[in-house]
Amino acid sequence: MTEVLPSSPLLQERGAVAGPPGSPDAAVAWHYGDPFGEQRAAAQRVAVVDRSHRFVMTLTGRERLSWLHTISSQAVADLADGRSAENLDLDLNGRVLHHFVLTDLDATVWIDTEGERGPALLDYLSKMVFWADVQPQAAPGYAVLSLLGPRVTTLTAALGVEALPEVYAAVRLGDRDGFLRRMPWPTEDSYDLIVPRAELADWWARLTAAGAEPAGLWTYEALRVAALRPRIGIDTDDRTIPHEVRWIGDIAEQGAVHLNKGCYRGQETVARVQNLGKPPRHLVLLHLDGSADARPAVGDPVTAAGRTVGRLGTVIDHHELGPIALALIKRTVPADTKLDAGPMAAAIDPDSVPSDDEPQAGRLAVERLRGR
Image (cartoon, rainbow, N blue to C red; front, side, top):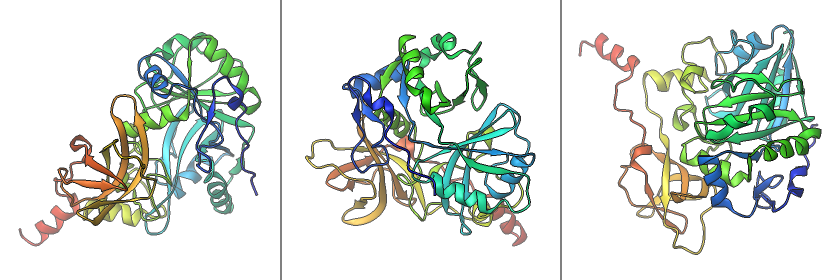
């Protein structure tokens, strides 16, 4: 059994306040004394965030990519060296069990996912090997840091890279162990470092000395929510399917589900919703009335006139938008509906409501066959 990762050594940094007790983020810094200032640094300058509570694992072996392609939702069989992708593990009914980010670099696939879910994902992958030439293995000796902000460009020398990679590309950190990967979220300028855990403090010191400002996970989460990017286990529940939470799309579309690849577990549900149906819920951004003394919690019901119409996900304070949240809301609920999220009044951000008015290809084909 893989052990739970201990608290980050970076919690010893000046001003660090740990994440809420009992939360998935208790092992890292939630903020360093100025949460909104840290968010502004990430949006306008450059900030470094400790995400070392992510679970890191590796896949090695000649068939690592072709094998992963057959058991997950993304098309990765031909993923080039130095390229990354987002991916899902679904159950037989197409419900999301795991979301993970992967990078193939120098004959190794690096995977990172939620810390609490990592052991279960590794266990599943290990059980699916059978006769394939692939070796899944935990990599507790490695950890994730994230750099956010337009001034990441000023850190190339500190990172040991000649140029920053493109979205979903990765480069080695000079002659040091680890790599730098660019992501399309939570901001336009988002980069992950996967580095040896023993070198976290050294990397933190190097990056902050070069101008990166310390920011807690509060910053990362606020920007993620504003960008409408879900987090597995918080913004999803045990009924969530990919169409509900914006995970449909190939790598070029910054999605986690390729719609034109071979069979994988849960594909039937994905194809049926894509071609014939509509998802029962969709992920939206809520603006919350911050005047209430009590705050809603993850999983609280979202109600309209006393009737439950959704489920609350991440609740966070944003430096510009104020109290906001992600929520899974029934697709049929109009955007102007007055809602309550726990003790707070809530309103759907109309720009966050996905458009699903176009008829699906499968539905059109059925109607053609019926002569309509």
